[in-house]
Structure formats: structure tokens, C-alpha cells
Image: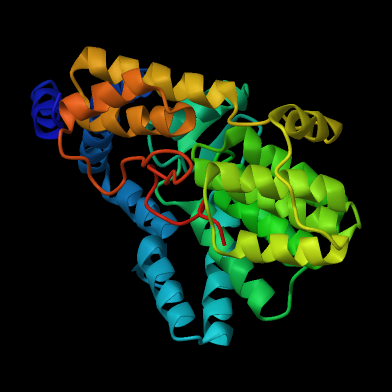
Length: 360
């Protein structure tokens, strides 16, 4: 159901009693959350704001604004400062935003805030990170905000201090690979092979694109080169190129070949899987991620919600190259848009609105 239609239907059921209205809207919100109905949640949120008292509205303003500016606008200022290479000022503002977030959106014994950006992230989070706590939807993308702060910290020399900030970013969105990739970069810088491997495993568990899988493999290859495990590094670099090309990887492979004193020869699939097993890693995408995307696509198709079905279908196809899935996509989108997958191995990311799971 369209947002405006849902909004008007809900508004028609409201009365003069604010307490009863609040109870009704909370019940509707929980129903929409169970159904992953984001348009419904959006409509309820707007009506709940309309239903607030002046005191309640003032409290909402307090927790959603910093120095009179809405938090997303503060983040925009930070990004602008970063683009201007004014890292000191960006760090000062990002630190204020960080402190605001962890104070006003801290978890309690009963609740936790989550910055989940789309139905698939919601589905994956509930599937893979089960909790008894009530999940409150954060009004902004705190994972991205804190990841930006950590990046600024690294750029300004506070590399190790950025680690807890990135861990906090992952708490707000456990299925966002962005902060985890930044953690990998820190562990690569500090030559912490154990933590590169651990973080890469976490990424591979939730990766929704071939690009993310490829980058995770390349990170492992880099760490193995640093530790002198050249033969195993070959496996991960080759596997990276199998999922998504990136100009940096061939250069790193050339460096590895020079260290080994011989050209790199593509290993067999059996050898790739054998070596990956040594590091408790399975080759390819996580089947749970594929299942979650496919189930979500099926649900939206049954409901006739094609705009939400298509991203889930594209993720499913990118990870499986299933021709039947491709046929369904082309049925609803005969002229593929830029985010549609290309044939293997040139597979592209199809979800999200940032570069968090692109290779670096």
C-alpha cells in the first residue's frame, strides 16, 4: 500500500484522545515492523509526531539536533569538511556528533537502537543477530556517521583509537560491512593478521555483493603476504579476482609473484576450497544471505511490490548468477539500469547508496 494511502487510512482512525491515539499508533507500528512494511512505519512515524505534546516535541528536537542543527545535516557538514581536506575541523565536529549519539542513543537493559537502512538489512539482522532486547529504529544512519569519524581519526593519526569507534558503529548496524572494512584497514596497517582474518570472516558472513566478497579475500591475501604465507596468499588473491575485478589486486599479485620468484598459476577449485578451510572460511557467498535475499524478493513479489522486490532479486542474482532469477528481473525491468549485474566475473554491487562494500 502506498505511503499516502496508508497515512490517510491511519489518520481517519485517530480520535481526540492523545493517549488512545498513541496506543493505536504503537500497535500499528509493531504490526508494520513485523511485516517489514517500511511505508507503513513511515506513515505511523509521521502521525506519532503530529500526536506529540509540545513537551514531547521539544524532547524529540533535543535528541535529533546538535547545536540547533539536525544530526543528518551535521553529518553533511562533516563530509563537506572532509572533501575540503579540513580534517582537524571535521574531527572536532565528528567527535561532538559521536558523543551525542552514544549518549542519547545508548542501549539499555531492555532496548537497543539499530540503524537499518532497508528491508534486507532488517531481515538479515533479525536472522543473524538475534536478541531478546526491543529493537528501536534509529532516525539516522549512525553506522555511517561513526565510520566517518573513525576514518577521520585514522587520517589524523589516531589509528588505534578509531577501533572502539568502529566497533560501536557495528553495534548500530551489525550487517553494514562499512565499519568492518575500516577495521580491516587498521589491522592491516598494524600488521595484526589474526584480527584481519577475524574481521574478514565477519564480513563474509554478511556480504551482500561480489565486490564485498572480493575485497574481503584481497584483505586476507594482503595479511598473508605480510606474514610470509605466500602460497596461501595466492589462493585469496585469485579468489578475489573471481568475484569482482579491482585494479589494485593485479598489482598486489605481481608484487607477490616477485616475492615468490615465479609467476602465479591459477589453482584448482579444490585447492582454493582446501586452503580457505585452513582459515575457517568457505568459498563464496554465505547461503544464509542468499536465502534472506531470495525470501524477501519472493515476499515482495507476492505482494506486488516490484520496487522493493527488484533490489532483493538483483542481490540474489549477483550472488548466484541464477538465470531464472535474471529472467524475473528482466520481466519487470526490460531495460537494465546501471545497478544490474553484468556477467561473471565482472559482477557489480547492486544495493545500498554508498561505497561501503566496494573495493579500495
